[in-house]
Length: 157
Image: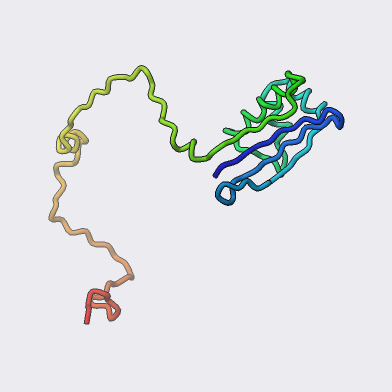
């Protein structure tokens, strides 16, 4: 799904508006949410960093995922640092999250594989050699198993 966040600053009203759009139909963005914030509150948050701006812009209605929230917060901070920048538009596509190649660590440790025979492991565990495979274990129980149940599925007509 494609998403767009439109951020506009209105210095006359002293508010900042964030609109969230999503591509619900092919090539057509639909407005999902619009939140208006006090410029004063966001400027104070911007002075405390990205995390403070994230906390300030997130509401019950506007709660962008973390991967999108950080660029949105950085755009808000940039708008307050550049007085001529009155709007910003951020586009995101969820499929880009799946296409990214995983990071490969530069240094890899050499893995040494040992082959071990399973029989050797069993012998090392110290199994009791006196075990008699032919010994019968008698357990007294009130449950009895019927030799032939009338509802067996094995019989196919």
